[in-house]
Each structure stands twice: as C-alpha cells, then as structure tokens.
Image 1 (cartoon, rainbow, N blue to C red):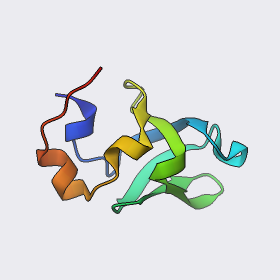
Image 2 (image 1 turned 180 degrees about the horizontal axis):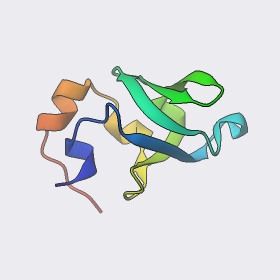
Image 3 (image 1 turned 30 degrees about the vertical axis):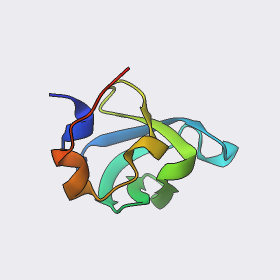
Image 4 (image 1 turned 45 degrees about the vertical axis):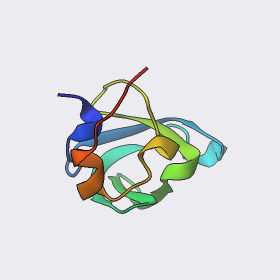
Length: 84
C-alpha cells in the first residue's frame, strides 16, 4: 500500500527538503496531523511543520511533497492518488 494512503500517526518522519533551512533534517515520530500541519516529536521536543514548505519521507519511503498532501488526514487516506 502506498504510504500516502496510510495513517501517519506514530510513524517516523524525516524532512529531506524545505524552503526553510532550519527544518532540514528534522526527524521524529508523528504525533498529530491536520490539514496544513504535521506535529513531530523529536529529541528536542515537539515541532510543528507546515506541509506547504516541506518534502519528507515516512518510514524511509519515497519522498512526499507536502503541498500535494494538504488535506485532512481522513480525506487523504481515501483519495485516489496518481504517483509519478
């Protein structure tokens, strides 16, 4: 199953690209997801990441562009996705 269709709570997230250089390399466990934000628990505490400015992987999967998954998690799971 494609990682975009799965729930991301309690999965490991790693930021591999961002327009904000301070977010590069952030890695931790997803503790919450909303339409526009992902909250990640890191060793330095919880970080709120805007989906619109990051590219990331979930459990070392393919790279996901945050702008492409800006919808509620319950809607994202049930959508039909076309991956490049």
